[in-house]
Image 1 (cartoon, helix red, strand yellow):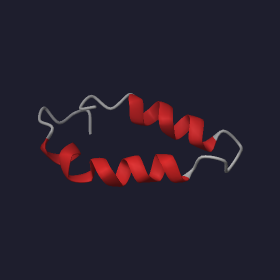
Image 2 (cartoon, one colour):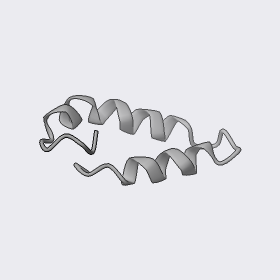
Image 3 (spheres, rainbow, N blue to C red):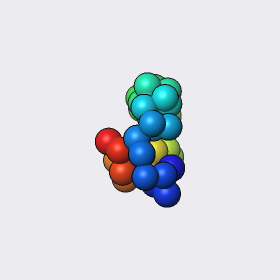
Length: 45
C-alpha cells in the first residue's frame, strides 16, 4: 500500500482496516498491538 503514490486505494479500505484493528482488542498474544502499529505505519493515515 505504501508503494502507491495516491490515497485512493487506502480511502476505499480505510474503514475495513480500522474495524479489523479495533475488533482484535483483547484477543491477547499482542495481536492488537501489532496490527495497530502496522496500521499506524500506513502512509495515508
